[in-house]
Length: 116
Image (cartoon, rainbow, N blue to C red; front, top):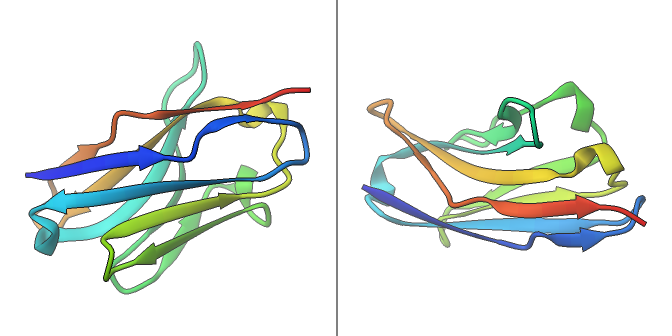
């Protein structure tokens, strides 16, 4: 079992920045990829960015150049630095972990609202 605790969401003006954090605990030795998804009202959950245990990253087209995912393996934490935020980035952001045995775990979600 892996437990995930997210933090860092909030209200920000367009063009602003936020950094999300997700700390993992439990069976952390089993973690392979860590990532962030988001779900806006009335829409499906979608991948934002992911990073493997080896450091390879993958980004959705709509965040390339604006968001950066990083990982601190010593702290078992994944971060999402979000810059140049737009109103359409408003969503609940979920941390996700994929283990080497292909189980995945989800955080409770953190609200990000981009509005003036």
